[in-house]
Structures are given as structure tokens and as C-alpha cells.
Image (cartoon, one colour):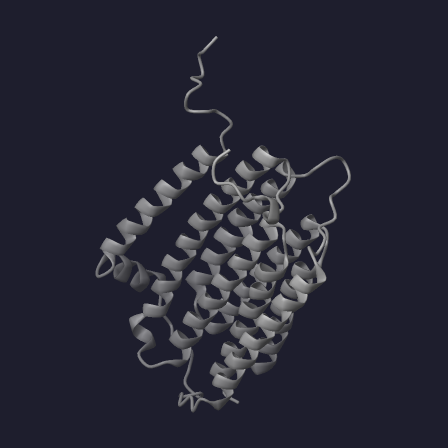
Length: 172
Length: 103
């Protein structure tokens, strides 16, 4: 059980770290897709099957396509543009800040008396129960998130479209 | 060390990888990917506390993660549309040069 968690953590953290350090954006995007698939496997390990499938559908399926299209649409020239670290001092500052945050978080986690029932069986929540909860007590949030998605996607299309609002399509 | 602590350590490290990427890279796409990594780390936390916390049958963690994934998808769509708009304007996506709101 714990061994599987270690393997998954190695997959997730390794591919995420290598993706963020690489200079080729395509390789970074592909490695991040691997990391997101590892996170979906973690959800399966934790017993949240529906979230795992949602993660696969949305991250591995949809957001990865958006990322790849953004990389391809913003490519300059024929050769893949190597992405430089902007400056060494900036990189070192980011590393110090990230390391500091990691140290604080790890110290807090290891020092916290987390009183949990580790021997309990994995809780099971079927999709039917989940749907009943979504459509029962959480209906308002479901409607709000649907509205948010619609508005955000319309805004994304408007932002990325080439047309200016003052130039109608049928102008001569 | 309990499994909950292992899950929390995993999510903290993932969060910090995203944080370092956001702070040290100048490429807009990599910065957005770092933000996505941080959101995923938060989702891992929700699932871990749902799994090992009290009352897992309520399913609050799972429902929160579903809404969080939807919000992250909306954020990614708008973010990459902005990247494409910036590229159309200045022909590259370096964040240091993107210092005008109107152009």
C-alpha cells in the first residue's frame, strides 16, 4: 500500500520537476501529462474513482490539448525555441523561496500530531451517491460552476480570436 | 509516519515545484503550467483529508475537488487564450516584455 504510494509520488514529482526544468516546451507539456496521469492514479489509490476519471478526462484529455495547441500556436520559426532561464539570480531567488516554503510545510506536517485512524478500510462512495449529493445539497454550486465555465470559455474564445470588435466580418 | 502525512508531503513538494516554476521561469506557458501544478497539489490535499479524515461518507472532499477541477479548467482556457493574445501582440511570450495592458 505504502510502496504503491512511493512509486506514484516518484512518478508525479519526478516528471513534474523534470518538466519544469526542461528547455523544450513540447517535452515539458508531455512530461506534465505524465504527471497528471500519475495524480489520477493517486486518486484511484485513495479510493476516489470518479475524481480519478474526471482528472483523466479533463487534465490528461482536455487541458493537455489546450497546452499543446498553445505551444504550437506560439512557436517562433521552424526550430523549437529553447526556453532559457531568464537570469541566474531570478532562478536562485525562486529556488530559495520554493525551498523555504517546502521547509516550512514539511516542518509543519512532520511536527503535527495527525491523529488519524490509519487502519481503516478505504471509504467507498459510489457514483450514484455522489450524483445524489451533487444534485441535492450542492445544486446551487453546480449551477454556479456551470455558469462560470460557460462565461470563461466564451471569454477565452473572444480573447484568442483575431477579429477586432470594430471590424465586422462582412466589411469590404 | 502515517499515510496521511505521506500524502501531505507529496502535495507540499508538488506545490513547491509549481511555485519554483512560477517564480523562476519567464515563459508564460510554463508559468501557467506551474499554476496548474499548484492547483493539483491542493486537490491531492483535499482527497487525502477526505480519505483519512472523519466522516468520509459525506464525500465533501470529493465534491470540492470536482468543483476545483472545473475552476482549474476555466482558468487554463482563459490563461492560454491570454497567452495567444500576448503572442499575437508582441510576437513572443516572454513575461518580462508583456508590460502593457493595452496595445
